[in-house]
Amino acid sequence: SGLEREAPAPPRMERGEADDLKRYRLSLEAHRLSMVGNLDELLCLSHLHGVQHLQFQIETVRKVFRRFRGRALLCDEVGLGTTVEAGLAIKEYCLRSLVRSVLVLVPPALVHQWKEEMEAKFGLAFVTTADPAHKADPDAFWREQRMVIASLALARTSRHRARVAAARFDLVVVDEAHHLRNRATEAWKLVDRIKSPFLLFLTATPLQNNLEELHN
Image (cartoon, rainbow, N blue to C red; front, side):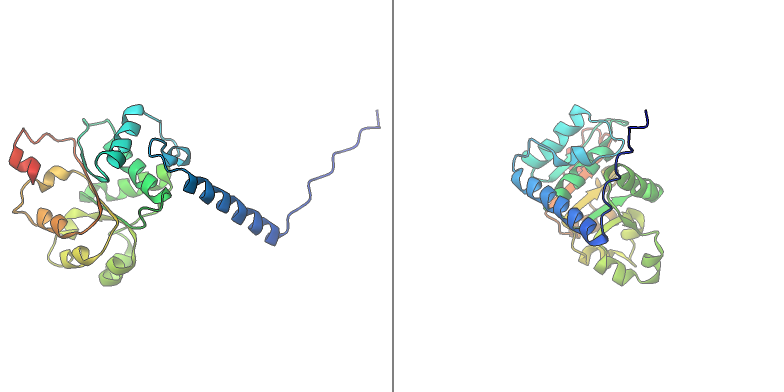
């Protein structure tokens, strides 16, 4: 009709205003998180990417918090997602500011897979022992890095185990934890030396009802 006019474009934000808005939103989110004290509500569920919310995994993480207080052995069947359960627990602890440093010990072939999965699904940025920083200065790497995925085979060697044991992490996760069933091995001795308030062992391999191996 010629009478219609194009709606005016929204005012463009200056950089300082955009920064103020971002800080406000972060402050609002921090306040919301501080108000949630009930462990029945997992904060991490709204921060996931491409992760299906399966009730048995959610309930597992709740039990890790409530019943086991962050020290547990997760023994689901192969394919039921112990890695996802560990990722949920790590994310939850980080969101609640209960954990600021995490060490994940895995078989060498799984280092890259763990790094990719933690970043893609949980938004958790880890460095690994395959990174150039580790090769360039292992002492500084273990002293300074706070989110680390390491090969257990590498960490247990005589060259590295003292550095790993001396590092302090709030949460330690050990994948394929059945490799620690023998307390005479260097792998068991290393993990036993690491002091951490929270500890998760993951395994889908039966220990054939050997109580000594389970105790170890």
